[in-house]
Length: 279
Image (tube, rainbow, N blue to C red):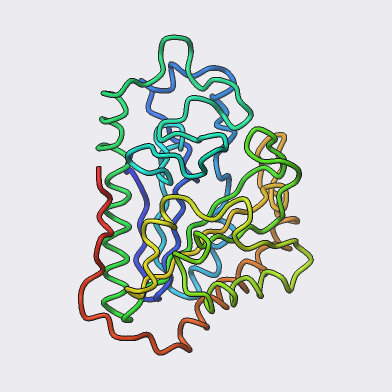
């Protein structure tokens, strides 16, 4: 199986789907516990929510085929914690979000196995993403990266209380120009869904690493509450619920795009620097 699905477009916008994959190699899956086998922490069906907008606007998409339980593409290669002081989600996760073990006793990946997965599964996705950012920036003079995710609304192990419906993150302003972030956020707020900017989720490794506003690369993460478009009990897509959410997401993407098009980005004569993930 291919590691990812890449569709190139000529828009300045790139959509990344690092956690929507569900494939797990047999030699890894056989060591999973019953709690892990259903892959409960997958970003189920997220690409479907954006599919029509992507087609209509010729947007580049990069979708992972492998499960985040194989390796988490939105975590740094050195496995550094993204949210110090909070429950850590590792590069090769050992527990599902609710806390149960992913691996049977004695079968957690060791350092050698993690290094193998990093080279085999993690690095190719990031190489592809880096290449697309450079390609799009070469066409337009700037690139917009939207990292698309979803999660359960209540996960006490990861956060207190109830998560807002739409969680936008720009690494507290470091990954995206303020006017672009505010345009996207304003579009999210014009709906019945509760939206927040840089709340519990400010963006993972992809947003933080690739967002370089000074080099005309602007990255925004969207963390959706899954119950607004699917059934949590069986992970099935709910067309009725999704129909209400899709126009809001399209408005957010449109605002992100249109605000960027209205700006005169300063020339950036040098190639995008420092994007290559360091291992």
